[in-house]
Image (tube, rainbow, N blue to C red; front, side, top):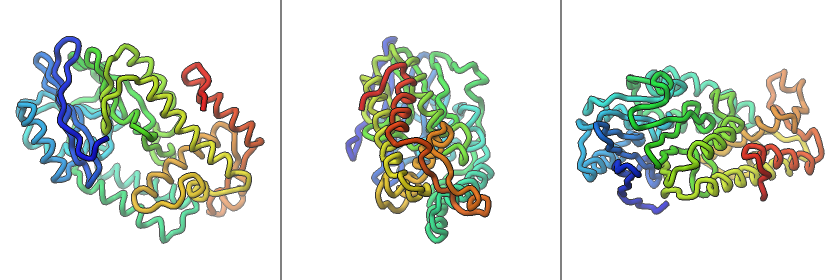
Length: 354
């Protein structure tokens, strides 16, 4: 995506108007919110991060669309990651719009402090289990807490399952994996897919030990459901990149990226390694928030390999004593790789060629 993405407009088959609002969610990190006008509905999809810059961009984008917060009838969240829901607490005082979110993301949005405490504790346990040194863990936890501290709990007016996954002309589908309550939305022939597919990389994943209904298994199943559900859409709008006109091709690239990373993980497991060691072998040396992201993603990959019986914990007595698990292959690497290819190909009913 361009470093300075532009405000854009789209139109659905029935003439509904869509405005894409670029927001600098964090320095040099851009996200999109979407304003949608259809009949009596004036809907904002996602809200940015809630930083001063992001909120200012949101208000500017609405103004450029000829709208004001007071005209919004609904604010709908694709998922509860801070760059998508963080702007709610600044938007809430200036609009009477009804706020909607999926049931599995209600706690994050409406009871933020308690949810943050719970997830931070699980994250701390996960980081210890990866084998990451103690002096490296606390800075990563501090980074996690810092970005979330921007937000204050905001009440939710309704949840998507409670309205049978439809609001007027908008339809919803639940797609867990990247986030427990992630949804895509459809208006006529246009789909808003949130972060289900992002250009050039795979969306962030974390193991279910941190957050249930996340993880690679859920994400792969959701990719297949999205591809089938959106098969007649002529345009797919996402949270960070240009519009997608060929969703199946983008999904295939995403699966190939996952396979590429997991192949590296399998290749290095000729000897027993911790999650932290696997992460370094797959992603190289990283630092800052990116270190947190890649070690969580590695945890999701290791979780998948372990739960599908492709790797084992080779030091159970050490684990019982509180030491990090070391993982080794249960079968020859070539056999594990063939199983991975077959498994990921099965999500579409076809073999994934790499």
